[in-house]
Image (cartoon, rainbow, N blue to C red; front, side):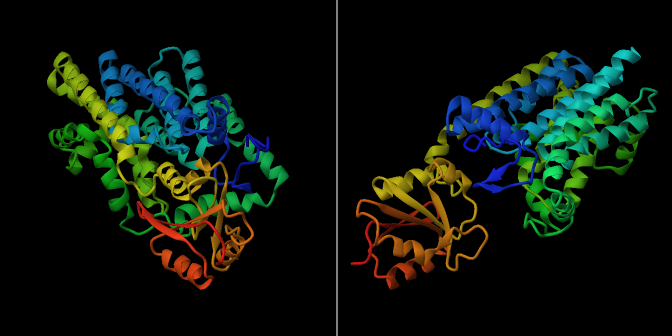
Amino acid sequence: MLETGNFLEPSLDYEPHWSKPPLTYWAVAAGVHVFGRNAWGARFYNIIAFVVTVLAVAACGNALWDRRTGAAAGLVYLSSFLPAVGASVVSADGLLVMWETLAVLFYIEAYRCREDARSRWWIRAMWLAFGLAFFTKGPPALLPLLALGVFHLRSRRSRVLADPAGILVFFVTAFWWFAVVLARHPELLGYFVGKEVVARNLSTEFSRNAQWYGPLTIYAPVLLVGQGAWLYYGFCMFRQRALYKPARIVELFGARGSPRLLLFLWFLVPLVIFCLSRSRLQLYILPLFAPIALATGRFILHSQGEATGFRRTLRVALISVLVIVCVKALGPHVSVRRDMARLYHRATAAAGGEAAYVLFREKELYGFQFYAGGNVRRVSVSGKELWADQTLAGVIDETMTKPVSQAYVIISGQQSAVVVRRALYEAHVTWTETEKSGWQLFVVSRGRE
């Protein structure tokens, strides 16, 4: 976007990329524009989103109970493992959680407001936040709205949730970009509906853990480990409140208008839909950690007394943050296959200077491309794949025409390394080979002898 000036039509590696609305891309581009083309600039928007989400969680706790509970809930969210990880990953999920949490906060404010006129403004703010959430990631943004709808019906409030002005604000905010791009590219309607909604959720086309056991292998570990030290209190709450008993669940649904019912629905409704969908990734359930943090913070203060509970929450939060910071500091010293910054630095070290980088049978690795400043080509044996720039043989032949000082670094996974090795050998090319963090690096500094 920064290079082409086209901020309306997202592209990936200069090819149209319509999988999400452009709000997250704008946020990344803004950070890169201000701080430069580096990881800090690309991730800066996530820092803002994380801080706002922590404050929104605290505000929800304050609105539902009191300030101390709100502060405890904010500390729980701040020091939970998955939210901390999500704040460092360049994706749409951080912004999505921020808008969704703000939307629920605005609904809570409207729900507890005694003045009808003021309540309507809170509802309109809620619809605006949901519109921005939809403009961030599309239909998944509306899962908390479904939970709020169930809660609203159960509470039998006379206040209007479907405010006409608010709904108008939502549709304008959420769909204006879709209307513009569909006017330019009418054929995208089939893609948005058929691919991004139907195929993504009901088929295995996107290869994102679509197996029936996917929720157990993808979501269950993240829900448990993602809480960090707070898992202990979550387990205590689950046991003491007997949430494993069907009668207790029925009792929760009977508690009309209670904060417990709101948090339960906010957690359960999206989780059920995430499990039913055939597209599953770990960060998809990041929005669930807002109601988890609120429930955990309230449980600690309620079970241990407000003063004692808050002091314990503060201590656990401080220790958890220190652990997260230490783990983050140790990250550069731990070999991680998906660490593209480390892979790039090792590739430059292996090349010994200016080099041309070639990815064999790797259609993604956009993080590597980011660090390489775009100096990346993707190749395959045939070169006929949509993502392939040329053939592996073509790159090997190209090394003959380049100066000796121009090194070529061919990067492949371990399973594909044998193909590269055979092609280099058959072409009588001199190369050196190293293995780094599960990647094979072939450095070709000259052509045939």
